[in-house]
Image (cartoon, rainbow, N blue to C red; front, side):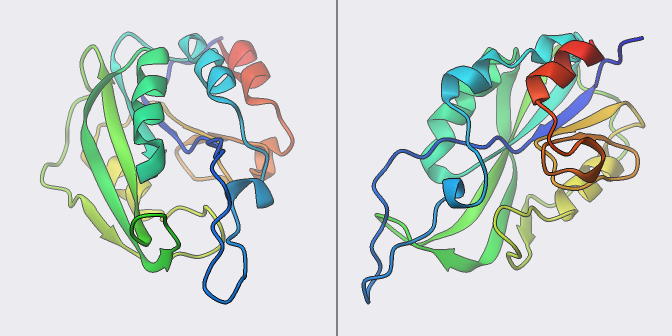
Length: 189
């Protein structure tokens, strides 16, 4: 039996192709590919999200400033229409950047059809939590989503841990470690 997830959150392993930043003192800044395998935009866009996506629902999509255009492209490829920036995460720690130091990440929200029934309004957009290990996201985002929307099936893609009340899928997630997300999506649908 297939499940359609009315709320999906994803933290894609974005491909970064720019040259590595050499910091003052000569050290080279680490990138995503130093910590985990990334995916090409073509592979991200081709993920069979339609197997688990309902006619009505929300997609919360993590992105960084340099990947904003790709995030909008991915949202469209997965069948969602961009609505707004749902959350801004102030990591409390600067990462090197080409123009300014990067201290924030963003969660965009897209809609397909109607949103689930809202239980709470006026959740805060700004989340200020110190960064921990590379790419570990603050639980405050999902806490907020859980408070805001009715109890509907929830899916986290590219998860790194399990979370009660959510189906979490990712090759670093204890319950699905090493799994291919595209295969999981096909089988789930």
